[in-house]
Length: 124
Length: 124
DNA sequence: TATTTGTATTATGGATAATAATACAAATAA
DNA sequence: TTATTTGTATTATTATCCATAATACAAATA
Image 1: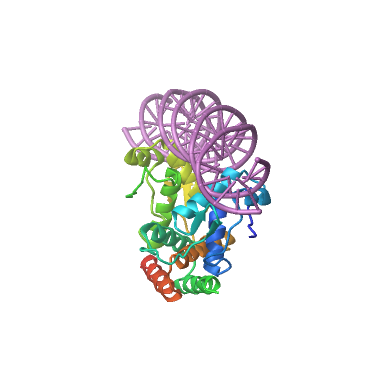
Image 2: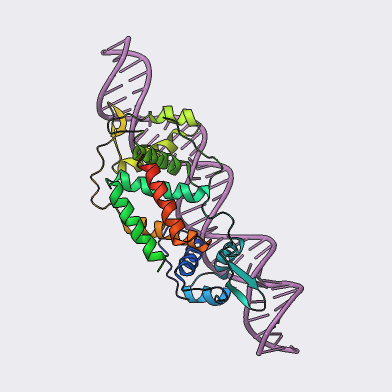
């Protein structure tokens, strides 16, 4: 588990941890059944308080992305069963991104190409 | 100027104001030269402190999206001259969105279709 | 039995968000 | 000229969130 945490970012550390796990799962770097470091271990690795890691794990647990078992620690769950894939928050964030691009002068074609490229990136 | 502000959101009000202006500009609801309400007027309309609106306007001004003139108030600038349309922050946010969709079980085709639909929505 | 696990609790310091109350120079309208 | 409105700056205050720190506990493991 290699996590790149930006201490200067305005994104909370626990949120960064959560995001990195999401990215790793989407890219297939982490697969269902894979174990995550223990709370204390990861906290020591990246040099933060254990409760900060715990908060990230609790978030991932609530989202159903990981399963936490006191016996086997935290591991990636059998996800992919989300009822709603694209919710309103998703659409709002995406619409804002596209709008920012257009606002900066991007054409529809440029935005389309750029987004397709990033889709390719995530889907290996 | 109709702004929908969600007081219960965890997104700061000044950020919501900024986002709504971006969305309106991208959709063509607001065009270059169009005037924005005065700081005090908008503050009264949505029921917040004038300084909160001022912070949103200062943000938009820094981004180059609006021009503030004491004579004519705030108005949409001649944007579309951004040197860098797609920066790293943009890509990070977009990659995270796509990853979340895949994490929830969306196929590459589903993600592609959904994104193309939202592009159509923004580019009227 | 001793250790490690996730988790809960309480306290503290720091940063940010928003409000409130003014104040001021510049521009406009009377 | 005078009065008003504009964006903006300042200071203080309250509330919330983030992160740390120091423990503590039950459950599971070695």
